Image (tube, rainbow, N blue to C red; front, side, top):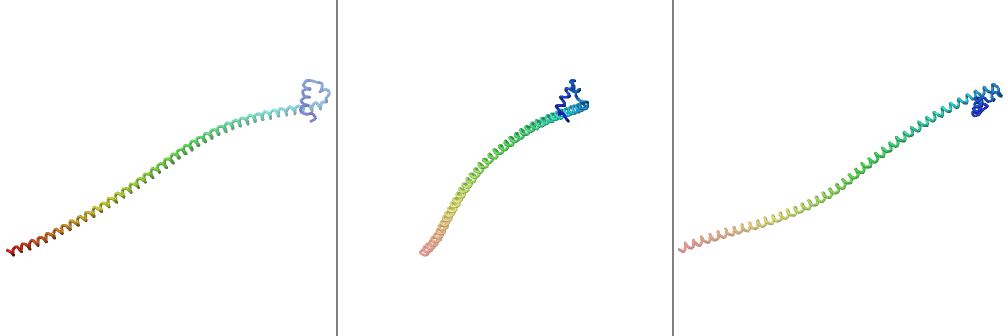
Length: 179
């Protein structure tokens, strides 16, 4: 077109006001100007519609972004809470594990002490048993020695009785013979 958009609008304004511009122009030029004016008006309406659509798209985009930000914030808070819960659970498990380890160490020490005491008691009992065995053997040997002495004394007494009996009989026989 011969006229720019702004020039066409300015001419349309002048024509609408009834200035003498139309009189100095030819009919074809006026027609041409009206067409350009119509085209400019249509382009302006089209641009206004596009601008309105873009503004609506922008508003929708802003709403979507806002919604995503809220969702993201909510997810982050949820993840933060889960992480805190997990950390609390881990800390609790770690505490329980440490308590179990301490208890295990304590019980192991008590078990070792108990074993040592039992071993010491077993050694004492073994020593006492050996002592009693030794005493029993000693007493048995002493009793056996006494029994041998008694047996020897009994044999000696029997021998002495037999000898004195034999001597008594001989003496009696000699007394008989002497008489």
